[in-house]
Length: 102
Image (cartoon, rainbow, N blue to C red):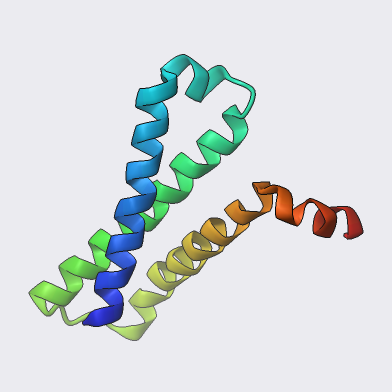
C-alpha cells in the first residue's frame, strides 16, 4: 500500500545518507571521529528499521498466516525503530534550547 512505500522510500534515503557520509568522510571519521556515537546510532537505527521492513515485506508478499501473539515482538521492534529515527532529530541545533530546558 501507499504508506508502506513511503516508509521504504524514507528508509532508503536514510541508508543512502549514511553511505554517503561513510564514503565522503571516510570510515575512520565515521567510526572514530568526533560524532562517532551519533554515527553508530544512525547505523543501528537504520539496521533495525531495515530488518523490520524486510520482515513486513516478507509477511506481506507471502501472505504468511501469523498469529497476533507472534507479532508482538515485531511490533515492538518497529516502534523502537521509529522512535530511534525521531530521536535523531535531537542532534540538530534547533533543538538545543529544548534540550537545555529539559
